[in-house]
Length: 183
Image (cartoon, rainbow, N blue to C red; front, side, top):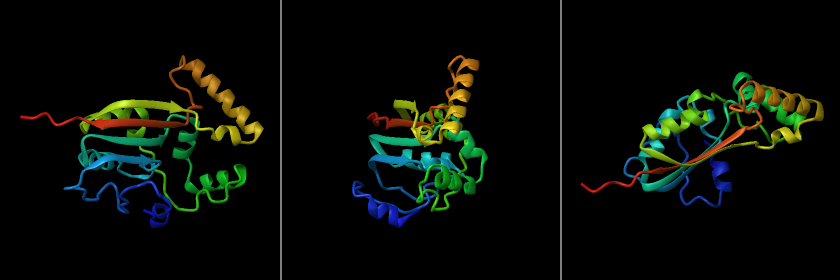
C-alpha cells in the first residue's frame, strides 16, 4: 500500500504494491513471503493467506507476524478507533511518527494464533514455528498504566489457569508449503 515504505526496504528481492486480498499472483512462485503487521489491517485476511499460500513454491515458507488478538494490546486495538491509537502513540509513547498512515485495523478473529494455524493448514501449509511473546510496548507505558496492565495480566492468568496471558502482545508463525508428491 505504500511505495515509500517499500523503497526503504533494502532486503526484499521483489516488491509488490497491491491489495494482498485480490492481487493476481498466478504464474509466480516465491521461496519466502514475509507478512508482518499486515493481516490485522485487512477486512479479509483469509483471502490474503490463500493467495500467499498458492503462490509459494513447494517447500516455500510463509512468515506471519501479527499482534495477538487476545492480548490487552490486541483487544484495545480491536475495540477502539484509529484516532485513539494515534493519541496513545503520540502522547503516551511519545512516538510522533506512529499512526501517520491511516491503516484501519479490522483485527478479524481469523488472525488470532490458533485460528491462523487452522487457516494456514486449510491452505496446504504446515506450521513449523509459533511463538506468542511480549512485544515490550507495556514497558514504555507510564508507570500507573503499566501497573494496571500488569495487575490485569496476573488476574487473567490466574482465572484462566495460565491459558490466557494478556501481556503476550505479539505472535509470529512460520509455515511451510508441502512439497509436491510426484504422481
